[in-house]
Length: 67
Image 1 (cartoon, rainbow, N blue to C red):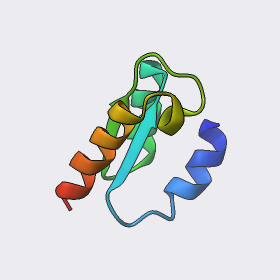
Image 2 (image 1 turned 135 degrees about the vertical axis):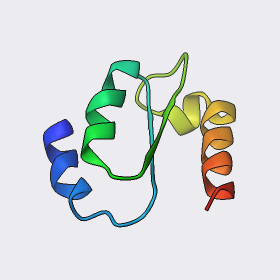
Image 3 (image 1 turned 180 degrees about the vertical axis):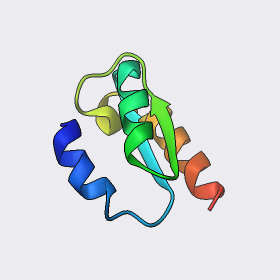
Image 4 (image 1 turned 120 degrees about the vertical axis):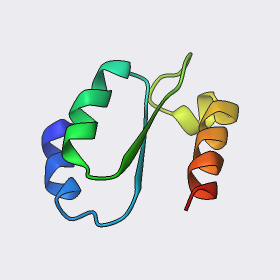
């Protein structure tokens, strides 16, 4: 996953939001993007927005409110 993200990250020129289920991804993701906010959800698998919508939506809403 991180390899694919690296090629995309080089093209990003705006603030980014990364929400994951694995807190250990934070340092790798932070190293790839110039301006990234990191979020982690608890109690979800790969369908974050479906399994824990209250956590996911809160993070997206907060991020968008800062733009």
